[in-house]
Picture 1: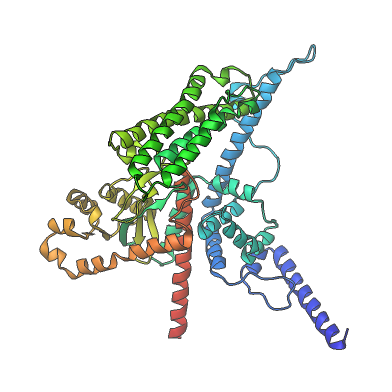
Picture 2: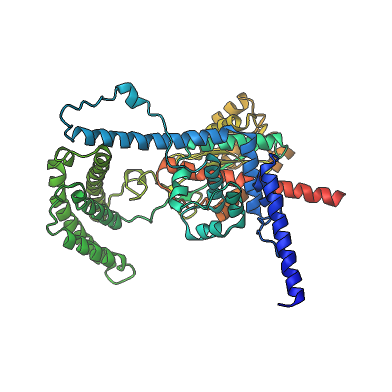
Length: 545
């Protein structure tokens, strides 16, 4: 090694040791945390530690941690949510232990005290395996909303390789958790807690002067459920196949499975017929052949139902075996799911037969549209491509923050949602907006009059329906015209939410889980929007200086 190399190596070691000494002294001096160094400085070439870059993710995470410091109730609520999940698991373990004790003979002369009802109702958490700290769960909740998912492979790779995330975890003495641990703790954060986080976020934004929430623009959008596009044949095959697979899992609980009979062969035949139906389009005699194949498909499906239905009615596996409560709950869910699938398959059989052979159609609300998410609905909005999913209502402030989010089951008319979302805006922000703008889908004169009576100064509804009951001078006013032009800003909000935060395609299923997922994405968007506005303000200040 040359002299120059030796000197360069020595300088690098000295620099690294100096960095270590600064971090060590700073950590134990009581003046702050290592995160304030790791998340607040940029790395230099040759340093032992790779500092977190000054990226947007870093700034979003910094804003999230600042909100947690300013609002300690956030972490307290997350901790309570984790307690609820832990207590549920402990109660199940306690019930299993009591079941095993009741089925185990005691030693002669040994009398064990029985737990009282009050002891069973109050289960204190004791020292056990360390769980994820509430702050770490909160950070991954924000990151889930920021990257759009914690189950997508690309998002996982991004978080795994993120210097910002690793610097934060190292500063807390944490290693990168397993993905199942992350998902379990993030999903434990209830919708109520997520809503409280959004409320605290909006309060902080107002306190910092980033928005006064005096204006709101309301609109709805369609989001796709975590489900494939349904067809009657595929839905029928999916229900029967899932019910049959469930019938073959009884052996996991020490019970005999339902007889297979010819069901596997019938399911294979259904798959083949479904393929033939799908390739009929555009060919000669397509309608006639489709009817022929559908007749064979329904006849085969009827054979499966005729075999499985009597067994599901005559048997009740819960009466056949004594199991620990946790296993009994799993068996109950399995059997209820099997019965529900068979009942749904009968309904699909009926309306498929009506559609193909009787030319009768039923409304979408009377049909099963998703095997994985029964809460999903048929959403057709503004002449655009229809989707199977949900139609959330969004409210945007003047500076681009989401101040209201309503997610209901079904395809509710926009006109019924204007008053509820304005009420939510006032509840979340503590401000009665001076001006509310919405498109023609929300145009109902009674609702407009009610909002004006409730204290909203201007309710500007755009479109031909609204013009019919709006005074001419008010419609032609400068304020009204400016509001109509500015209404398109909510479209840009929807675009950003869908393109950057995965708002348009859901990863979770069920109404409550969907609300939780969309709240996470809205919270992350608001942090991101705050970063942009602060950056713009700093740039203007530097330019003015």
